[in-house]
Amino acid sequence: MGLKQDGTPDTVFNPDQVVTRAQFATAFNRLINGTADNSSTGVWYAKHLEKLKSSQIMNDISNPIIEEVRGYVMLMMQRAYDVIKK
Image (cartoon, rainbow, N blue to C red):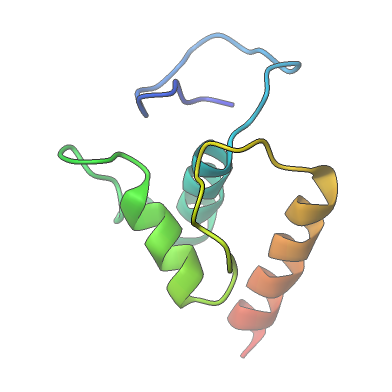
């Protein structure tokens, strides 16, 4: 995944590790928007979640620690494509 729970880089590849909404949103937002929403203070994932919500890519940011399901990834990718295509 590339991120520890606290948002710091992780150099160990763990493909079977659970990915949280916060981790996925941070990685996805960085893919789309770069690192502009990184934060060294406060909650490390908050700006990433807000950016995806304001772009209408991610609608539910209420519980950033829940595990995501595979279908949700495809839905967000489609929404991101629709936003970028505009």
